[in-house]
Length: 120
Length: 109
Image 1 (cartoon, rainbow over the protein chains, first blue to last red):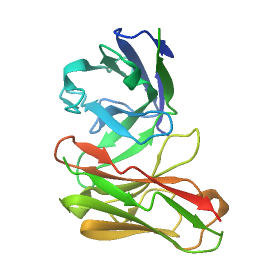
Image 2 (image 1 turned 30 degrees about the vertical axis):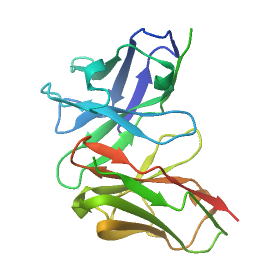
Image 3 (image 1 turned 180 degrees about the vertical axis):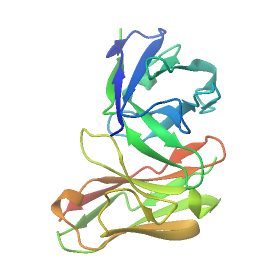
Image 4 (image 1 turned 60 degrees about the vertical axis):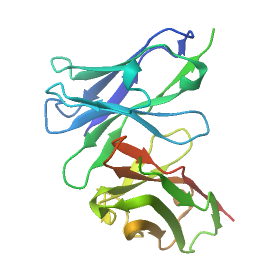
């Protein structure tokens, strides 16, 4: 079965860069799916950050586009997010996920999520 | 940007009752691009419905989705104790590529 697991720091200082990695098991990321990140501030709703296709094509939320970078390491079956210039507004649970962008698009597998707090 | 508005913010029902959750889009959607998710406290969202009406793998048939254009509905025919959670609708297409409704909390009366 497909499983995703986020890893990264739980605490980031203001103005610093967040780096998260998602390790996928049970499925090769070098396939016909997109792989991405969604975040959820405590007690609030969901926000799609962006996603990457194994070929390298990326899509990102316009509100974050200038600060976001995605990468894929197919040899490790991992994909990663870098989010620069972090502020308190970026405090959230960050989920990695598998996204199907074909007919009837959907987000069908999610990691458990990792809480990232921005604080000095 | 297509904005999804879910109503109401909170619904209160007893187990065994039928619940109907609403999701309204700010502009007409291709029904293929509408999905529903369930989220319990401390857990990631779980895909319930995609393509407005197709149940995801392993989802019980008491969950059903319907709608077209700007109005979509998630119906839970007979509420089980494990169904009390927060439900999000989500659309695909446009910019940003994915957006979510603000969520409806289904609570036990």
